[in-house]
Image (cartoon, rainbow, N blue to C red; front, side, top):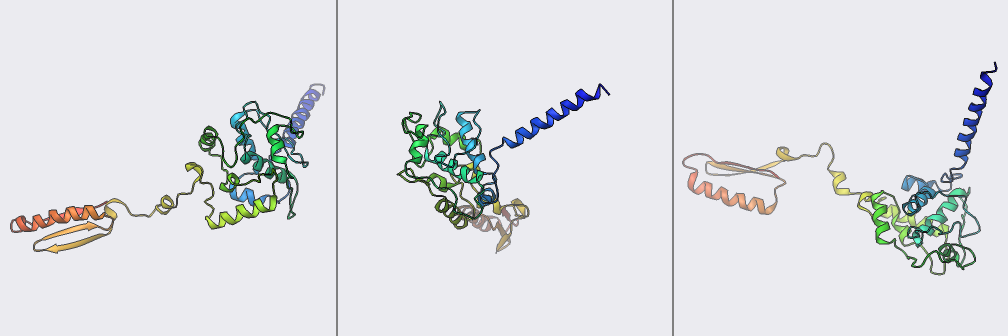
Length: 261
């Protein structure tokens, strides 16, 4: 019996540590109020925000967002990832994710909240952001976002108010409206997250190569078969060759030309 007790204590400690880790995951939304974002993007806004911040600070993790906005601050020494209106908008969406807003009006930010977020303090005296970006990410950070396949909706790039305020309902309704208009193709800042309608149309069952439908043209003893996908220039070239064949070769042998694209 004395040998079993230490094993039990270790088991309890392991289970306790696992429970602590689960509680510490602040990227999980509370309630269903932000399901619209998860359905559109495939992850919570806190996860998107964390991924963006981790480009500049690999140790960054989302904490508990402060309902007294701004919900977070841009305090990283390499601040290019958070020193912009895109990161601030994501932090506000993350705040609404953590709060059980249900079908309510959510949390807005008052005048000056964005500036406080950039300053790294709610006193407005910080100096975290020397060159804040409006409605865009720095070029190198945008490249990193695309390389990491981080999905940031197009409307997040244009989201923001010059007086530093922010409004949840307007942001939500704009994103959902534009997603319907664009048939959910609203992640076009990166080629890796843009829906390519042309490639989607050419799936299994689409005809290629010699399976193309052909058109047969007859003249004398010769015939020319042209694939339905042949471009105009290719058809004209083969047609001239066919005419040459008719004029000079038909009495000797039949000519059959096949063109496929």
